[in-house]
View 1 (tube, rainbow, N blue to C red):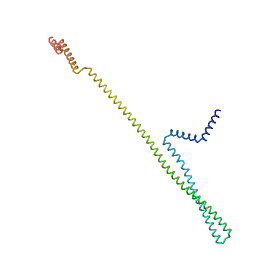
View 2 (view 1 turned 135 degrees about the horizontal axis):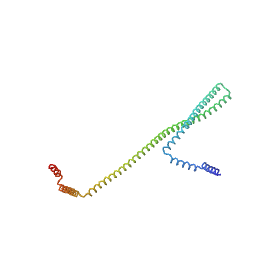
View 3 (view 1 turned 90 degrees about the horizontal axis):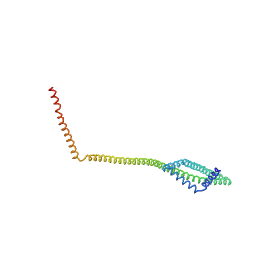
View 4 (view 1 turned 30 degrees about the horizontal axis):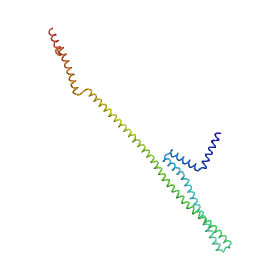
Length: 253
């Protein structure tokens, strides 16, 4: 049952689409919009060019048919005019031979018929000749226009490639700019690190006091060391005297 309902609904939609020009127009417009969003302008241009080129053989075939019809009409006209001339000469010969009026009347009727046929074929041949010229001119215009369009398509393709190249170049420049900014920020960070080191060194030097304070402290240290050595020398009798006393005792013994 559901399948039947679906078929009926599709049938109603199809009928509405078939008999409603506005619905067909809306569908075409929306389809074109969807195609525009899914394809590039260059792709649409190339597709249109291919469709036009595909129609060219049919136009050439149509022109060939017109040319053939025109040529056939010219041949038919030539034959009709020859028939008129033939009947006219028969009439002249018959009159010169004193042919009966019935013969002359028949020849006159034949001539009139042949002349009417020739006039009609002359009109057809003239119109076909004009149609041939117009068809050939239209084909030449189409071919020329397609050549220009083909050149435009080639330029469009080249421009599309150029656009891609420019996008790549722009992206490369933007990436380079970003890297330079990063390097610049890294340089700033390095300078901050160097500044912090110098500040630490300065604090370390300041923690040691002033230069005169350090010199005084060194003087006191050296004085204390000298005093300590003097005291030890006094207790031990001096570092140089002790070995001498030992040597004297050994001699006395």
